[in-house]
Length: 305
Ligand code: ADP
Ligand code: MG
Image 1 (cartoon, helix red, strand yellow):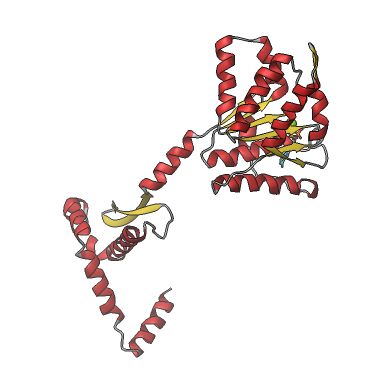
Image 2 (cartoon, helix red, strand yellow; image 1 turned 60 degrees about the vertical axis):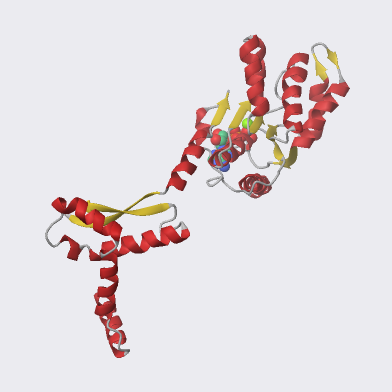
């Protein structure tokens, strides 16, 4: 560093530029800055006698970064603004989050992922470490594309991830959910077979209907393992049907995962304990088609690796 300074000085001297004088000028301007002056006056008692001389470079950095921030709303450290502080009797610069950064973080903290009947470990699923194999590349690319659309506030359908047991469908949904919460979207990811089974078991008018409302209205709903649940006429038409109808009408982002291909899901909806109703099954399928695009997730069963 010293060598570079020496060389620079020599070049500038040759060009008749007096670096020391230039630096003095910049330093003096910074020193005379009203905010700097106020800071020095306020903290006089804490400063060492030679503090101002020794802190000149820091003071200069502060004024330069502050002016940049005032002019462009940015500093060299994205999202942070400079502050003068006292450190060991000298003046130093510390960077703190700007009001905008704080507001953004506060908004992001409010968005959350609700896992229903699924292991909490899925909260740490990430698209970044998603193990990319050829059979899953398409699903991953499309999954990322949906998050990009949300980020850019473009409309997008959700995905219907179909594929065998253990290929990573649930994990992929959870990874998308993680990204979407970062984009300030509230996400509910629900394991359908367990949810539907418990719904009938623990039916309470109020809690059940408030749960259904949440699933209707949440920013992003992910129905995991659809097709494996044991539906009654009520849970098919008044729970699943109602939720999907509302989400379709309001164009709310909805994802599915299933062991069934989309075209093989319809028969599952046809029959309940009370009868065979192909029209109702078709209507439900139309909502799923409208809400999502199918993508096949392939590969090996990862559960025994
Ligand atoms: P599916 O829902 O298709 O049955 P899962 O998402 O449950 O499959 O994945 C099966 C197992 O593999 C789980 O233990 C999961 O944590 C793990 N897994 C899946 N995908 C990944 C991945 N990309 N990186 C790390 N672990 C994964
Ligand atoms: Mg699964």
